[in-house]
Every structure is written in C-alpha cells, then in structure tokens.
Image 1 (cartoon, rainbow, N blue to C red):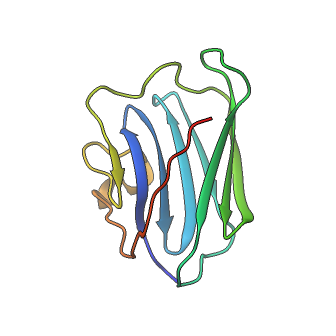
Image 2 (image 1 turned 90 degrees about the vertical axis):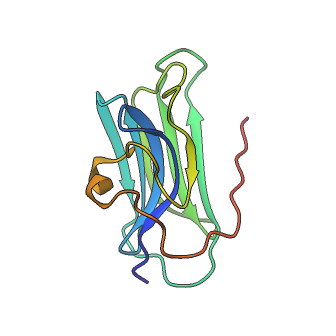
Image 3 (image 1 turned 135 degrees about the vertical axis):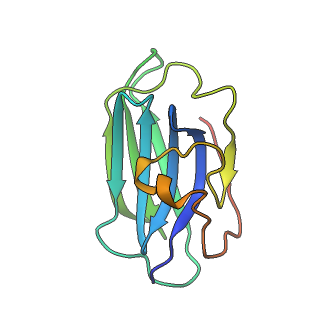
Length: 132
C-alpha cells in the first residue's frame, strides 16, 4: 500500500518525463526543460497487488511545443490527469536513457532527486510503449 519508486523515466533533470509511486500514490511528471514542470498525482493510494497502469499522452497537434493531455489510469479507471501546456519539440537529451524501475543519471523529478536512483520496491511485470 505504500510502495515507492520509479516505474519508468525518460530523460533527466534537464527535461524528461517520469511515472512513479510515492508512498502508494501514482505520480506523473513532465519536466519541460526546467522551464515548467507538469505534475499529476492520484488522490488515493494504489492498493497492494497486481495492477495495470496506463499513461496516455495526446498531443494537441504536430507542431513544435504543442500542448499535450496526459491521463493516468489504474485498472481502467482514471486516477489523475494533467495538461502540459508546452512539450519538448524534439528530444529530451542525447545522454539520458529510458529507465524502468529506477531513474539512473540525473533525475527527471526534483521531488525524488535526494532519493536517487529511487528504485521501485515492488515488481514490474511488463512495460509496453505504443506510439500513435
């Protein structure tokens, strides 16, 4: 009920996105190159057990810096959402990676930087990434 740690992270402190649990709450952060941070946190804790977590990001258009709607779902139910007013026009970084279960290198979120690499203390069975 109080699991913590990064589920996945892409990029780093200079820009990126991260999905993590913090004392059982699901949190998503879009770090727009230190300029802006868009954070969404579930109201309730995710209970212990196996769950399906989905993150859907929908760009408003294909133009650079376009906004994006981000929706978090747990077992098919929406638990949080946010709007990133601007998104990174190309790539976050040439030196950061896509990490699963941990945030290696510089951390995407300032909120867990002192707990780095912020390893997830549960089990991740599978990660799927689909681009539309």
